Image (tube, rainbow, N blue to C red; front, side):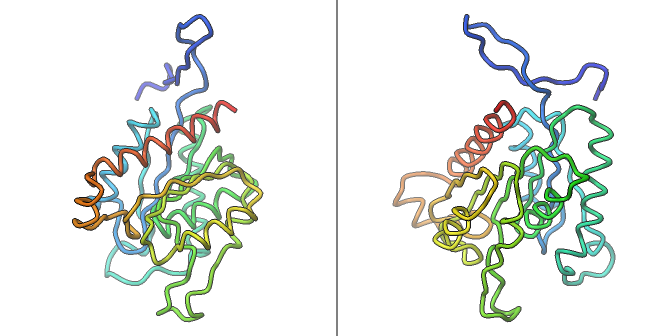
Length: 230
């Protein structure tokens, strides 16, 4: 990428022409607890985000616990420093470009923590399957953990499957009403925690997995565009 000629987003002027707007965003995309940045899911969404957001780059990485012998992830708080360093390095590499933090499940929760840090200049957050509830197997009977979201002040976009057990939509709606940050929600009807829709649901709705995910990524793009130009 030639940084001497930074990519720009364009918008229509009043006379119908095109005029330069803000620099294209750079997206930092964090993986979930169980699969690395090289997983098929992450690669597919990386490509979709880059195209839909006209991003100068979509940076992915693996948290340190993913290297070597497979083991369970540590608490999200222990991943914040590593994630924050990736943000700082990326911002240095792409000066002037708005920084958007995207994440899958756990990666979105850590991203929200990083976005709340005063020394990280983040323009927006995209949460793909935010894990609002603790898994019952971790104790606390699936308690809602909304404190990270309530600390946010920057625009935040949620994409959730309607059948995601880790984020019941009514619980998320209650949390969104309490948030200080401007926020929006796109629901993938019939989708699970990874947005996978059952075959019967797709047949009943006469739609496809690709169509559902394309609608989601377009909703993300519209939200980011409004947030950056607003």
